[in-house]
Structures are given as C-alpha cells and as structure tokens.
Amino acid sequence: MADSLIDRFRKWFEYEKQAHATVLASLETVPEAGRDGPEFQRALSIFGHMIAARRAWLGRLGLAAPFQGALFPAEVDLESLKDDVHEAERLWTDAYAALDDAALGRVVEYQSFDGNRFRNTVEEILTQLFTHSYYHRGQIAMLVRASGGQPAVTDLIYLCREPIA
Image (tube, rainbow, N blue to C red):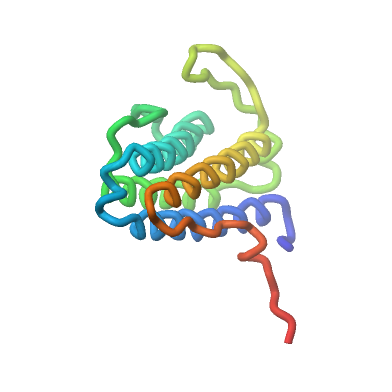
C-alpha cells in the first residue's frame, strides 16, 4: 500500500482514472439502437454529474477556478463527456501534486449548491469524491446493460490484485 495518506489518495485517483476509461469504453459498447433510449442518456448524465462534482470540489478547495457549470447536466453527448473527463483528470492531477499529508487536515468552508454553508476537512472531501464515484459507476453499469452494452468492471481490487504463480 502507499507510504503516506496522500499517496494512498493519489493511488486511488490513478485507479479512478482507469475506472473512468473503462466506463467510457463500456459506453462505446452500447449499440446504436440502444443509444437512442433513455437509459443511455441517463448513463451519460450520471457520468457528467460525477465529473461536474469533481470540478465543483476543485473550486471549493481553491485548487482551480470556481465551477460555473450545471451539477446535473441534462443533454450530455459521449464525445463531450470524454473531453470533460480528460480535462477534470488533468486538473485533479495538478491538484494532487500540490497536496501533502498536512493539507489533508485543512478545514475548508464552502457553500453548497442549495446555498447552505458547511465545513469539512480536505480528507473528508476527497473520501466523499471516491465514494460518490463508486456509487454512480454502479448505476452507470446497470444502465449500460439495460441499453444493450457491456458494463465495465471497476472494482478497486482489480487494480490492486497481485497474481500468484
């Protein structure tokens, strides 16, 4: 496992990038006929929401410009989604390079989308981001299957698993 807590978060982020690539590939497996259905559009919208949430937290953490988009995008197309995923990953790669273990304990005050104010540690926020993505990737997998595609396998253990000869 990782040497420090921030290294562990960085490792999970590398896993998440692989998981996102796998989910994008699974969306490509949906046949053209399935792409016209509501399940496919819902899968794209959920993935768009995951990326929007990641972008919003970057702004709240002061690691990027404040997020100006919709938290729940309505009309999402696959090509734009790919671009959004790659841009968010680039921004988060830079953010993780700037963080260390001491930064994880920093308390961040922010305003939620409903206008309420809250505070959390950076560690709590990063943990939320990963669990939020796990939850939504499961939903996307079900929607991809319902659309006629092959759902992605994105369990963390597949990244960590070490084969034994």
